[in-house]
Each structure stands twice: as structure tokens, then as C-alpha cells.
Length: 224
Image (tube, rainbow, N blue to C red; front, side):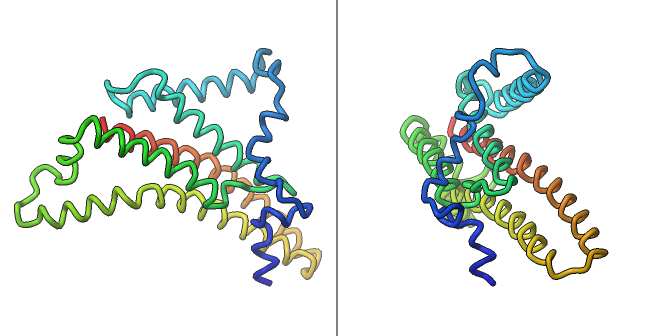
């Protein structure tokens, strides 16, 4: 039962192919370039979202952030959001439910931030290890705590996104597997529960992509 339950996260379980990771870039094939040039309601709505994110990320980055630096985190948000939503459709591989992808996004960003901070703002990075107003007795402990919290940041970013995606898909899979063994009356309530859970998962897909992008922006602002 456990093997069948977790088989939805196996890249080779869908159509017995190992090319399911290509679904990460499926949007580049599905959406033609002329679609973005033609004005539409979705295009206007999506542009308003990007403008709002641009203003918010620029505020988080502070005066040291450039206009172009926000596009990195907006692109990160768009990539994660697209993959989270695509994973809700049947027979489409959810790449964000694997640490292979999430850690590949979080770890290089964190390494770049740390290298940039320690090379260009060494004194600021040392000062960041000891919060202001810390007693002298607690300073060695605070250095250890702050160092550990900085080291585990890429792991927490990756695990948070992966765990939320896995949890929702497991619930949908469990509800779907119990349907054939239930009566018609109970299947009606099960269908309503699945629809409600699917709406909840859509909200989780948006929230988790936003959290990933915002935390990456905050980590970037700390090294400047």
C-alpha cells in the first residue's frame, strides 16, 4: 500500500518514462510567444501580480537592491507557482515535490548570497552573528546559534516546499483510492471533500511559491 501511495512521486512511474522532469519547463512549450503579446484579461491580471511582486521585493531588498535584482525572485516565484499548479492536474509529474528540484533552487541562491556577503561585507556578516544588545556571556552561544540557523536555511527552504506539496498530494491520493470501495452515498461526500481539498491545494501552491520567493529575497537583503 505504501509503495502504491508514494508511486505518484516517482519520476518513472508515469508512463514508465524518466523524462517527466521535462514537465518543469512545460510552460515554455504550451504558451506561444504571441499569447503574451496579445492583450487579454489573464495577461493584464498576471502583469498586475508581477508589478505588485516587483514593488514588494524592491522594498524588501532596500536601497541597495537594483531594479533588475527583483526579476530573479519574480522568475523564481513564477517557476515554482507553475510547477505547483501543473502538479494538481492528472498524469502530470510534480517536480516541486522532490528535494532534487527544491534544493537545486535554494542551495545555489544561498551559496551566492553567503559568498557575496563574506567577500564584500565581511564586517557586516560578522556583526550579524551577534544580535545587538546580546550580553557578553551569551555571545559565544549566539554565534553558534546564528551560524547553525544560516547553514540550515537552504534545507528549510527546500523541505518546506517539498513537504507541503507531498502532504497535499498524499491526501488527494488517499481520498481517491478509497472511492471505489465506498457506497454511492458516501462517494458524493468524498467528491465534495476532494474538490474542497483541491481548492486548498491551489491556495497552498500559491502561498508556498510566494513564501519561497519572499524568504529568498530576505536572505539576499541581509548580506547587503
